[in-house]
Length: 67
Picture 1: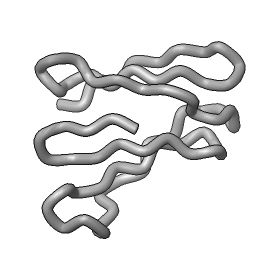
Picture 2: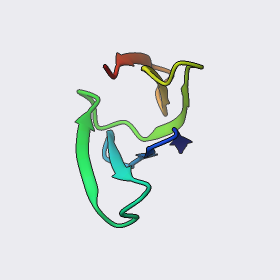
Picture 3: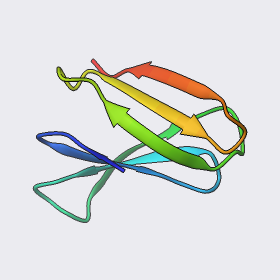
């Protein structure tokens, strides 16, 4: 899980990342697909909160621009 000032990013077993609005708490904003079915094991946001980096169960690392 990674938390920005506005959003919560949660990794899923099926290789996706769910994005939730922190203010609405239970309102899913978007689902990002990693392109694999690997479990998302870790993630981090950069200091500007515009890049999300994830690591999967097979050792794959992906970086996504969020702006």
